[in-house]
Amino acid sequence: MSAEIISGTAMRAEILDELKQEVAAMQEKHGKTPGLVTILVGENPASVSYVTLKVKTALGLGFHEIQDNQPESISEQALLELIEKYNQDDDIHGILVQLPLPDHIDEKKVLNAISPDKDVDGFHPVNLGRMVIGGDEIRYLPCTPAGIQEMITRSGTETAGAEVVVVGRSNIVGKPIAVMMGQKGPGANSTVTMVHTRTKDLDEHCRRADILIVAAGVPGLVKPEWIKPGATVIDVGVNRVGVSEKTGRAILSGDVDFEAASKVAGKITPVPGGVGPMTITMLMKNTVKSAWFHLENKQNDAA
Ligand code: NAP
Image 1 (cartoon, rainbow, N blue to C red):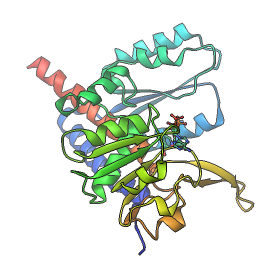
Image 2: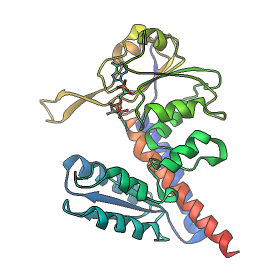
Image 3: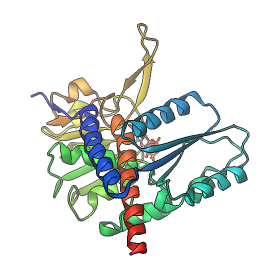
Image 4: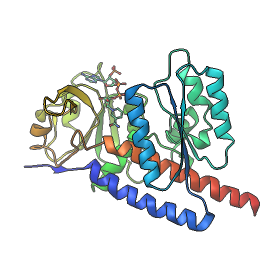
């Protein structure tokens, strides 16, 4: 048996095409496109490359994009004032602060200062609360879990009644995706188990999973014999396991032994090229959603 590969790269292209059409429709209807500001503090090379990719993707979709670079020395107060300026700017629908921030700045304070209505990363406690309530309350889902759910549904995996096992309980991946898959509604309605380092018989839990989502950050943690034949396996892990002699670039590997797991699973995501490309894509999707929300609400106000 050889698993079907769920390609995040291919899905990204498909979703970005859909978003381009939405942006064109928005331009036609409102004469505006989604506005996204990316705030980068300092020059951390990894942060610079993440922000560059986000900006490039946003520009490719025709967004009104502002890259606001600030020096490492910016004070917490000045950063909070900058965020408030964008909170009040009607042409900006999404505010993104690239993490990590320098030590003298309280990250939590900064993230909480972003208006929940412009929090396209979906990290604000208000949006996490809305996510837990579910249904019509949901505004912006956190991007990596939203990408995971999109991959599961777009790959044609049945989620209703499925046994979902999530390995990991972080605030950015494990916990939110466990809540989302257990919600009432399409792409969910699953029976969810969340496992972690204190779980007894981790392998036994994994073996029950119709959908196995692994976000532990441990290369090769999940062995092929832990996978139920035919299961859908979503490998969120991104681990640097070496450096390529040829390119000098990091060699990346997931939390699942991909080669061996592909012989057992029904569907599986690769690393790289799996969940990774979906995260920025969902950020763009949230920004388009926010723009519609702001533009249509404003129109209703004027009516
Ligand atoms: P994290 O905050 O370090 O959390 C890891 C979780 O996995 C913890 O809950 C931990 O359990 C659990 N865990 C670790 N080792 C385990 C083991 N041996 N057995 C069972 N559970 C174990 O990590 P994260 O931020 O969620 O990220 C997880 C992985 O996903 C990383 O490789 C990260 O790079 C990747 N990631 C990828 C994307 C993307 O592709 N876009 C986005 C985010 C993260 P305890 O709570 O008990 O410690």
